[in-house]
Each structure stands twice: as C-alpha cells, then as structure tokens.
Image 1 (cartoon, helix red, strand yellow):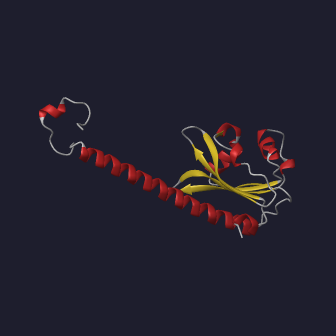
Image 2 (cartoon, rainbow, N blue to C red):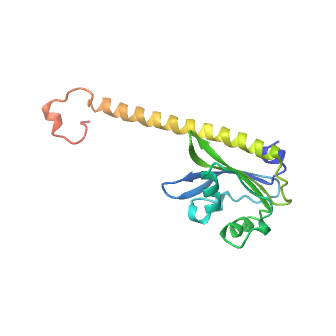
Image 3 (cartoon, helix red, strand yellow):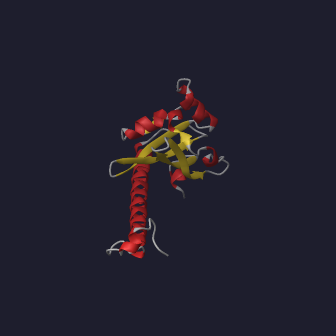
Length: 173
C-alpha cells in the first residue's frame, strides 16, 4: 500500500523549491484510483502565487487546511479548489537547515481529520526525503568537483606550465 492510501489521502506530492528562480515544481506524485494527476500543471509555479506554503514552510511549520471551502477568497483557495482539494496537509522538507521543498497529502473525496498519526507519518517521510535530496546534492557537488579536478589535471594546470602554454587561454588538445 502507498503512503497516501495508509492515511486515506487521495493524492501525495513532493514539491521542490527553487529560491533562485523563485518557483516551486511538483517532482513526484501518487494518486488514488480515479484521481486526476496535477504534476504536469504544477511546474515552475511562481512562489508569489503560493506565499502561504512558502512562508509557513520557511518557518519550519506544517500547513494544514481542514476545509478549503472555509478559506477566505484569494489565490490559495483558487489554486486548491482548481485541483478539487477539500483538505490538505503539507510539511516542509529540510536538510541541514535549508528548506528544499515540501511533501503533502490532499484529500479530494473527504475532509481530513488530521490525526497526529498523519502528521507523524508525513514528517518522517519529509525528513527522509530531505536526507535523500541533501545526499544527492552532496553527491552532485562531489561529482562536479571531481570533473573540475579531472579537467585541471588534464589541462596540466597542477604542474608549472611552460611559457608557451601560458599564452593560450585554453588547454591544448
């Protein structure tokens, strides 16, 4: 059984925050049978359209909306209603103090009771995702560092270069 079905959610999503481009993107999604996927529509969403999520998650807090219909009119209600979401629970994904994104449960067919168990499960999952993303980021950095080191070695930049090679701005082939 999936994580979403364990808590009777209809959709479970992971979003990555990109603070350089000020966007968030849905990177992974699970949907219960008969529930429409939203991942294709939730790519590079400007953060200014979802300040409730971003501001809450940057504080390290969960965002729980028991009933979308009770929200005041505005972009948050509009976005959630357009996805047929009735209830929502999201938690931030952190790694070493850096907010990387969020993971969330959506309920479309019922209202969530938001039990402590749902929050606990989602927090554990969010923490695990944060560790994996952090490790992936470190792995990419190490890979990039290795590529740079290899380029340096291949260009013979770690040994004193003869004067003839110093005139060329790029490595000799």
